[in-house]
Amino acid sequence: MKISSSQLNELYTNQKLNTYQIAQKLNCCQATVWKRLVRFNIKRRTPYELNSNVPQKNKLIEYYLNKKLSTWKIEKRYGFSRGTVHRKLKEYGIGTRDLATSNIVNKRKDFSSNLIEKAYLIGFRIGDLGVRKIWPNSKTITVASGSTIKEQIELIKSLFKEYGKVKIKTARNKKINIWVALNESFIFLLSKEIPPWIEKNEKLFLSFLAGFTDAEGNIGIYNKQAVFQIGNYNKNILSFICNNLNKLGIVCNGPYESDTSKYFSPEGYGHSQNYFQIRVNRKDSLLKLFNLLRQYIKHKNKIKALKKAEKNIINRNIKYDNR
Image (cartoon, rainbow, N blue to C red; front, top):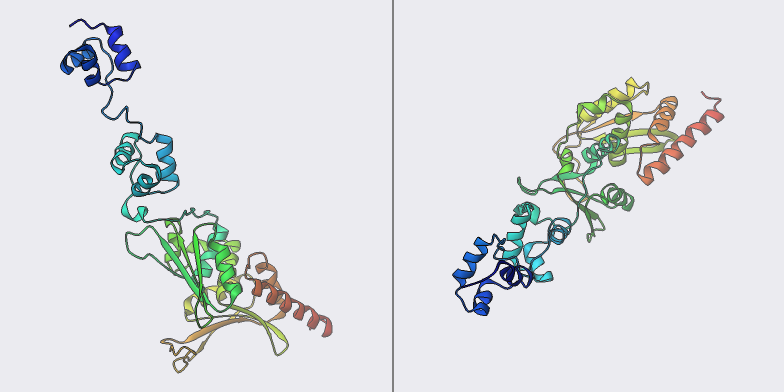
């Protein structure tokens, strides 16, 4: 059987005919066509090369990596079979997702790694946030909280909305619950311990204090006098804050212990441990504290309270000639 190299190249390479079609056209067997391809050193195609319904690499990266679509959804939306998608993922060197990653539906962003922001979030987390992994192998960090104060919920939303999906739901008792799904760059929020690096830098400590204050602190006017106080069941954290405030020249007193064993919340919940408080009462210490905290505090109500307390001290200083 006489078949020229140019003839076979035209049929196989240019016209994209398969070996069966060429054999039929030339009235020979398929084995003859294969032998001539080898003899003429014509590059053979892969079994799937002429399949028009195969996703290109850039499309597969867009669908599978960027849009996080499953192979099922790629098949349903774009018509590529799951088998083809799996085969091309391997061929293109695109790593397939594990089960935990595959279950992530909404887009998530890594934490900024800004230490000021990190210190604030740690303070706020210890004060008011429940943080957990649903299961050990999960790649989702879940942040949750509840409050009847809408400004508190707005603050939590503003802290995390650029990083993950936020869900908010109001219960029958008017309590507003909020959940946020974050990626593993927020794993530092799982711990309730204060990392040593916070104490080594004044700005980081103040940012941590602002976060804890926004969660648990109280800035108010009692008996016509401004006061700053924080209450919590963790005596060690309050001692840490009080000691570091005193190091900054801000006179802080406490922690004071209160017996709360007989106290029950309106929902009927009791307390298994006592409550502690720290306070700053002196006018000069309060003014210094407010001046340091104002650039880090984010809670709308706390900002208003700080300004009101500051005004109270200034008016008292004027009235009593700074006594």
